[in-house]
Image (cartoon, rainbow, N blue to C red; front, side):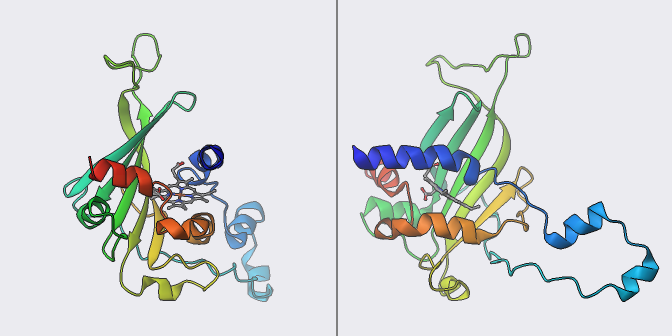
Length: 207
Ligand code: HEC
């Protein structure tokens, strides 16, 4: 029970944190936007303070998606009018089926859809079972494990060899996202290979 409560609290947080993180401009961009600098003073301006190093991700959108991926969990959010579907690639799926740790080559991808709306009423559409109907893709959150990727991550944040990324609806990686946030929140799940939904993935794969 306690674990369920904690994980649902975490879920409530992550609907914002995981999928639609605040996009904070870097200090450089912020000052450029607010104080247009005449070129004369730009020349004499002190070196701008470098932005804190971002932990760049090596993950790119899996080119074949959805081919080779299996959906393992779906979450409807009535209030946010979104449908999330979680997918695993073949490497992750096969390991989960065998009850093994997810190996190098594993990719998990969460797709967030806007709930489709009835054009006439503007209300969310429902299927025969009363569930929301997934509409346009809003974006993607992914994690991928590849040999030695973890070496680029400082030890206190390292999640094995996982890297994390967000992608926009056109599947472009959102370079402004700092995966340090992702790593920090997933790290306490080390016992589950840093995967919050490992049990759901195993249950689906072993069905
Ligand atoms: C505040 C904590 C938190 C942060 C920050 C966070 N996540 Fe998650 N993530 C979760 C939780 C909790 C889940 C389980 C599903 C759910 O409840 O939404 C999850 C699930 C996932 C999953 C599905 C696999 C799994 O672990 O269950 C992916 C992929 C993912 N997150 C990627 C990311 C990425 C990319 C970022 C950074 C941009 C990120 N997460 C940041 C908490 C977090």
